[in-house]
Length: 410
Image (cartoon, rainbow, N blue to C red; front, side, top):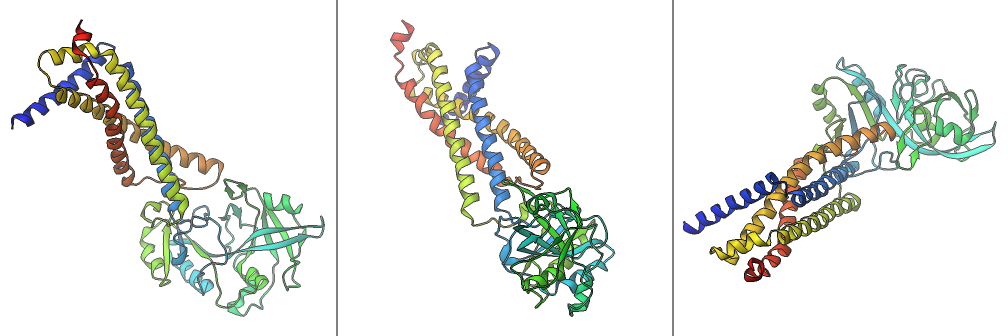
């Protein structure tokens, strides 16, 4: 009991010493310690949020799309545009059924392929990302490309016979049009496809899908026409289904459509499984190690300087009977208190950093939820703070033990 009371009393003395130094205007070095920890924790939380965002499953993003239905095997993917993976089947019938639901504004399958397109007018041939959709006549965007110029519905599908009217309509993003040197009204051919059908540029969309490497060259056309071009008519496949709705009540219906699929919400990435990809893990580990190293160096250095300037008070404590162990406890307690304050401030700054990262990514990259917040980030920050405080205490405690009471008081 006496030991516990003694340590509680020492903890009170540690708090009083810190408050007193700030009141006397002698806490600049202590403030630098707090700032160093806050910056380290802020970086860790922000970068950790990005790592969680990378680890979260992704889907094609379209304006006003609130849910994506994706094959279950793709939930660990961190690639926004993927092809030749697991697919969904019977997608025309499924989306037609979804569009009859009054709670759903719009639903469309999306088939993704990389196709070589040639523009005879400019004699240019390039590989382009091609997205097959079922437009509804509205000014929808898929991968940043507007579908408003496409004929509503999917005429060539003809209830699965694939012998309806061929529209040949495509909408190209500006990067795709520049790459092909194509203009509105130009015809496009497919040199590597066994198809004598031609396409023509119906419109050039000002929107585009941006990644860290820049905007992607994308064209959008009717799904059945892309299926016919690429020989993917069996089973009516698509890579994902985009669903726009203002009601969360439709989610159970979406989850029941395919037995091995996952429904991803536009804002619910924190609920998704973490990827086993090495990239998010590497990013997270780098953030933690950086926070530990930076925080430890800041706190250890500043506390060492502070103790050097405060040697006389420590000597006085020794002279009035405080043992070396009690003095070491005071130093450790002060270090933990300062680290705790810096961690609290750092977590707040980290949340701001996550919001700023998402805002910048949305504005300049066209990507939603690059970084996400999860309570595990707070727990990690607490664990990192303990490691920083424990490691940073070693140096000032060593300095305390080297203090010569007679020399200092003399």
